[in-house]
Length: 410
Image (cartoon, rainbow, N blue to C red; front, side):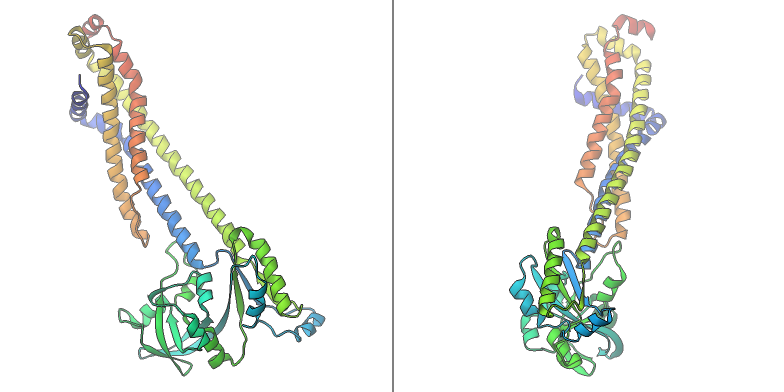
């Protein structure tokens, strides 16, 4: 019997015993559904978390902030230090080896801002292009701040994505003018939205609602001195400990040996969080893979039972075919193909159900959930393997029936 005829026979068996076939296929359907959903969902979740962590902008980042000493003698020493200033950059640039990039930032707090006919309090920060590179900040519309803006103390501004949406809506914001503390600024860019539904902390929400201006412009119009509130350093995440030591040494050198600052190794915390996320994803993979495996095993047992019943019902047919010249391999192949066909039908139904569930679950993700080709291939592969495993013994049993005994038994 040809393979196509065996497949036709197996499909006919499924149609003739609809209830039995449906109950048999439940395990295969659930198992393959779980596989497709598991691979797509875990992959999408891992990507969303990875994007959210990247949007935090702290990969390989060390932050240095001012720190008031508690000891009275140390506080007296701090009087001889200039504090955190943009001028620290000269010492940093000359001495850095492990640190890849450094950038200062000024936090102006809430300033009165007037834009698009509205007056409101908005958090304003003075930054540099290096700050945007370190913190993974880039423009969705227009451009980011440039070195020429910092050098010329230009009155230009960037808007956070949420702030732009709240104030301008669908209107174009780039090129419009706003007032910050009575100073007129021109909007040159709108930042992309940071964070995802899975990773969206308070700091991300604040960053999405800030106004950013050149560091030197903030110092000129709002501070009146070369003061900065923090320095951000970026280095290879695998060299953060050495980078932290270098940052401390450079800042101490710039501050005349006085430790009036505090170093926060945020990059190491991000590495720890990434490790926890990877472990959590792996645990979910194990759990869902176990559920899928159990369902497929149940489905395999069901197919095995159905094939055994089918052989009992078709003993006369087997004996008649063998008496007419059908060989043992032909009988074996017929029933093995029937088993695999039955399993593949369940696999296709499970894949279709998994596709639908994945599409529904994708609504919880900003970028949706793409159907994983790996999940579909795994579903097909497991369906074939289960069909082969469940069908070998019944097919072997059918092929070994003696034609005379089979006809008499019927």
